[in-house]
Amino acid sequence: MTANEIGGAIFDLDGTLIDSYQAIYLGFHHAYTQMGLSPMPYEQVKRVVGLGLDHTFRELLGEERVPRALFLFRRKYEEVFRANTRLLPDAREVLETLHGRGIRLAVATNKLGRFSREIFEQFGMEKLFTVIVGDGDVPQNKPDPEMLRLAMEKMGVEKERAIFVGDSVIDIQTAQNAGVRVLAVPTGNTEREDLVKARPTVLLARFSDLLAHV
Image 1 (cartoon, rainbow, N blue to C red):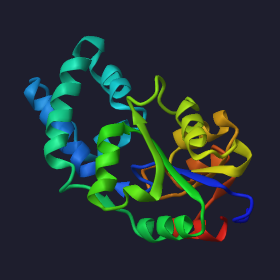
Image 2 (image 1 turned 90 degrees about the vertical axis):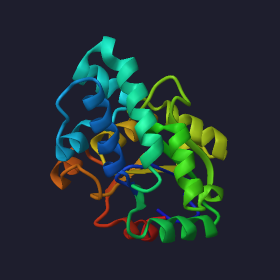
Image 3 (image 1 turned 120 degrees about the vertical axis):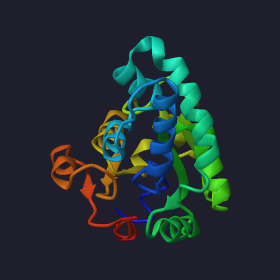
């Protein structure tokens, strides 16, 4: 891949650009305790998130508890996410470099879109992105390709000139469903061998290696 071939790069958020698992854990802990349930351990919370909170709470708690769990989680997350979210190593430098090369950037995440946009406003990075698409912005979350299609439309980049960068099997499946090349990074919860089995276009050793491929 060369800079001439790539017109737009779309990124997953949690585990790819940021670490916000502590904030997510605090949101889960609050929701569970307020509902009279035993809180989940931190490592278990990290394993169950990824498909969006509606799906996660539906699988864990059943349909009838989803509205209450979402309300409690989001209320707590609103309080704690700014102090408990950090950029992953090299994320800022890589994004700024790609932006400087004239490559359009976007985010496609199953995190609530409002929170996702506020995170980059906090870091002073919102102007790097053409669009940040999250949960609630489209009818279907990843691995449905709708987020990527919307991002490409907003960037004005056809799928042949776009890439998706993510850290999970869900991200790889999303790109494959959209017909987009996908570069996987082993920076989240997914084991490297599981990323290999999902057959990304490229499996990077570290996030900064992206610059050698774009």
